[in-house]
Image (cartoon, rainbow, N blue to C red; front, side, top):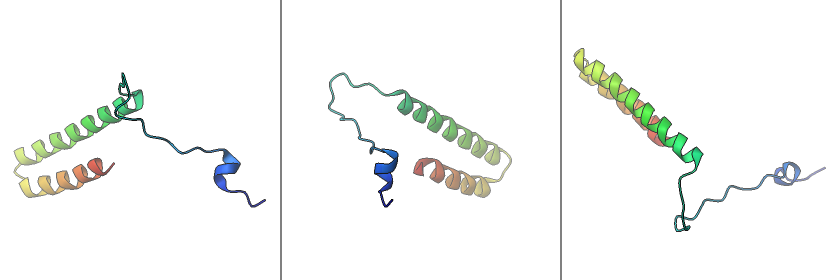
Length: 74
């Protein structure tokens, strides 16, 4: 009854790929993550541009900084 969770669900830890691997290319998951990151930063930058255009520089920079930190942390 007292089996560890890894044994019960047969979970295996993810292993990183070696950057020195011959013929290494980006996986589909890596490409999707990069695309989502670019779109999120682009959206935040667009909102910053609109805030600056409306004369709300301080609010725009504060919101952009908070959102960008959250995106970067992910």
